[in-house]
Amino acid sequence: MRSRSAQTSSRPAIATGVLLDELQRDTFEYFLGETNPANGLVRDSTREGAPSSIAAVGFALAAYAAGAERGFISRAEAVKRVLAALRFFWESPQGREPDATGYRGFFYHFLDMETGRRAWESELSTIDTTFLLAGALAAATYFDGEEKTEREIAMLADALYRRVDWQWALNGNLTVSHAWKPGRGFSRYRWEGYSEAILLYVLGLGSPTYPLPEASYRAWARTYRWKRVYGTELLYAGPLFIHQLSHVWIDFRGVRDEYMRSRGIDYFENSRRATFAQQQYAIRNPRGFAGYGESCWGLTASDGPGPALRRIDGVERRFYDYKARSIPYGPDDGTVAPWAAVASLPFAPEIVLPAIRHFHEAHPGLRSHYGLLCSFNPTFTDGSRPGQGWHSSGYYGIEQGPIVLMIENHRSGFLWSLMKRCPYLITGLRRAGFADGWLSALG
Figure 1: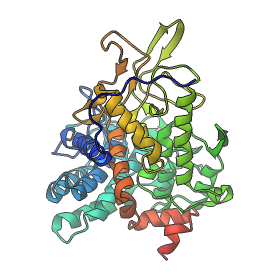
Figure 2: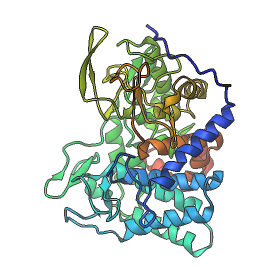
Figure 3: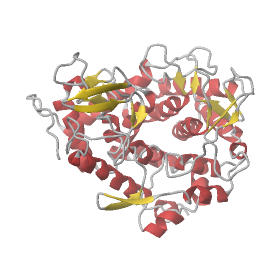
Figure 4: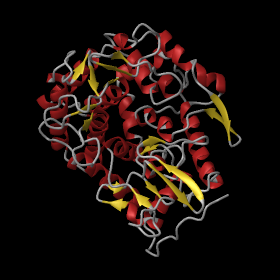
């Protein structure tokens, strides 16, 4: 059953180009306002006392390049910010000490904004280090001038990438471990099943120092699940971010590995199908949540109004806080993440652009100084927003980055084109078995 969405605003419709301009620029401001200029660390979220997220730093590094290209920031200021971050990560302590910044070239997921030391007893994260490295390599590819500062960016990004010991992260197996902690060792979880870790495996395979074996990628791909969702076949993953985050950096159009060749599509087409499946889920709205509809969709990892258990209109509902929401099997508590829709813009602009317009016009309370708030839930109410439901109180850096960069990829292909000049990425793709399309054209 399709839900009735909130009435649209009576304000004059804003042109699509202007709408994207404003959203991209406002979202980019997060990386200017939530960064420690002394060390380049970016706050994980706008919550009071939040530490830095190394993944947010990675998105910031790429966003500075896009921002300089777009005129949101001067090239000189962008270089200054990139250098502050890369110098910090290169010079920060690496070791087994519980308050170090990293170990074996990897870094802890969360770091103190001032000291840069490990925060929240967090894990040494292989995937978050991957996003940090991807941002460093993107920045090094863009800031490639002959000035001393830009040459230093290239040197530091290269050194950081070469220092990572991907082979150690295998922990005696073929698939990569999620994490490691001092005194406890490796996590029992590994990167298996289709996920955002496709970028991790590609960068790990491309390493000139401690590369993953080619068998590692094949072992990972053997854990994929192919499913039919709403009449469409696709490589399955429930939360939308899985179909997006590696695509921020890699243009998968026309390039295919062995698995995708066997299915007759590429990963870009797969993400397009996943995007349409999200919309179809919202239209069907099997759990009967408020607001869901053709232009109001997007289930992914996001903040939420819980934890709470409420009876609403005679139905007992469980609400979550930050959680990876998923279709079609759940979890789903009625929370929509606008960033999830926006980050699918390159895959399906014909349904994403109406969704962006809907968020702006039907839910004006979502608009704030850093663009659209990260999530909202029209079903949950605590009385503070009569008729509007719950709105998140802030922003997350790992959600802001994909908005800035995927808008840019949709408009100009900027980051995709940039990464096609990164030799490590190209080597990794080829060692993973990717061929055809633009990859073959490189010779």
